[in-house]
Length: 179
Image (cartoon, rainbow, N blue to C red; front, side):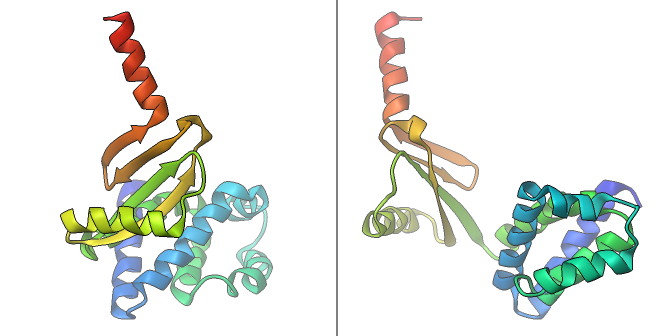
């Protein structure tokens, strides 16, 4: 099966299994852990990608650690990818799964970028304001970005609202210098 088709099939299967088991939220958290591991831990990536280590040994290495932090569905996905020597597909399967969850479970990701940590009360006010305009469930995420200087930048699904000081300064510079 072609890579893209296999990615869709695996993501859809994971989504449907999580939906049936009523564990979408937990499965989503588990796949985020796997994706973060894949990106940040070269040893984990190497175990997934190498063909020199047999499946049984890979399982013996990964199981004691991973089964403590991910659920059964995520573990089964990982085993399936290892059996098919397709560990390289993991990030794309997870990305596709996340898209399915957001679309089908009516979740809108909201990322709040700020130069400094935002107080919980301020974050709640931002989400309440957005929630008045968007009926779906909001899934907030905070990211610190010192380049913003001040203010905030929001990413709501695929729309960006930039109220940062850095952007305002850039706009002012363009106005002063002209086209």
